[in-house]
Figure 1 (cartoon, each protein chain N blue to C red):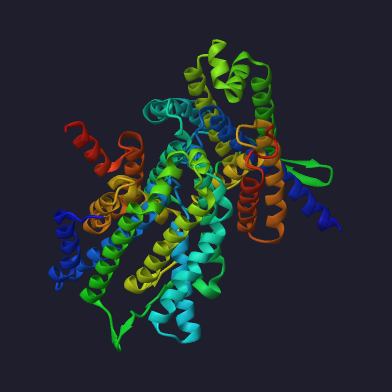
Figure 2: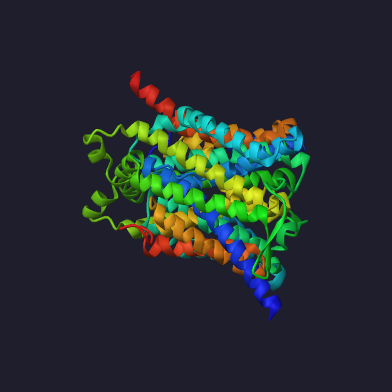
Length: 309
Length: 292
């Protein structure tokens, strides 16, 4: 496993950026959101890019984690840092449990199944107001404490930057490892992979668990960073949005989801006058990417570079 | 006792009507899926589009419902041809195209719902069409509006026509041949791509027709689009993807379920039960109940 100087430099840039936007709260906030989406997109890419399954229930798992986190903090009166791993693991296990039966399916049927689970959970978020406060949502979520001091502003963005970089690192590590090779083998031909002695179901469960961890951890930090969550934050459009970041940047590459998130995640905030067109714009992008550039920006660039070697 | 009978009668009439609309829309979705492998996730938006345009024609231009619906149906053929040419034709030869199509239609859903909430949602939040005919007929002791009886008649006539078309007309036979085995159909001289086109136009037109019938019988708002999408998919999966008979039977069953459930509690419970039914079928018998 070797790390190129360029990659090290870009990683360093990701970590340093929050300090540059220390005083500009507007740009700082956009940066924080972008880090969250980089983390999420990198996670989804492990299942979508490497294993070849499109999990539309991604946002629902984030939602379970976020609601569980707030519930644990409020009910058990425990610290954010104790509630975080509990909520993350809880949501990931729920995610795997829900996903377990659907892992026998592949392609369109898996995606449809995950869409159904996502829709059911969105309905459940609305219809169990005891945990979620229904459609109104939960606001004024207090930020996590660090030795008695609340983490706010650029300190939170530094934390998110660190999380994004660790997320990218883990994804890179998985990709390089035997596990990643098995994932790719399953994506390319699951029958062949099975006959080579790769346990397809177990490997899919492992991938699903890793992805759920990403979704859940991101959800916990999302809730505490934004300070407000509602069932709308975790609906099918959110899942589809994260999918778009992966597909737009380039699936099955490490850089793709990062590029997609950096280019697309800040757009709704930078073009506030176009807020009403946000859904239409992302719909158009989804259609265009699927039709014209299935490899995404980075995938197309790689193909072009290989052709011109 | 009398109020119970009245409730029963209203449940039956609602069930028949909703069932027919569900059956039509699901048949449209399943024809397109069986033929082209195109799972149309935006079917609910298509459904809503036709209803909204008909509403716009009647309320802004003062057309009567019949003319408005006819115009919408004619325009829908052109729109379907446009969609087919611009979007769906490009992937006809891709082997794993159903997932790409699914994503594309999810994108379309987002585009159309965005457009609706920027336009129609600003003009009104509850929509309804003027009735086709006025008056009330007593069926035994139960009153029923003539409009609803007519809509019911049109709905079941359309289902019957669709069935006859698929079973006996050469075109319908070619469609079913492509359902069953596209290579063999190709070898027997069926022009598969033009069958794809026809099936897309036919399936979409049925969905648009379903929207019009629903709008003629009930008032509606923008939220029915997503519910309809989920319901149509649930019917298609439970009935068996590509099975028109399955879509018709399960559509009726789901329509009655919804009519019965809404007597006691919110219709969301019915949607919930469709989702669970679809999940169970996907996990236990992915080919559905009616597909061999």
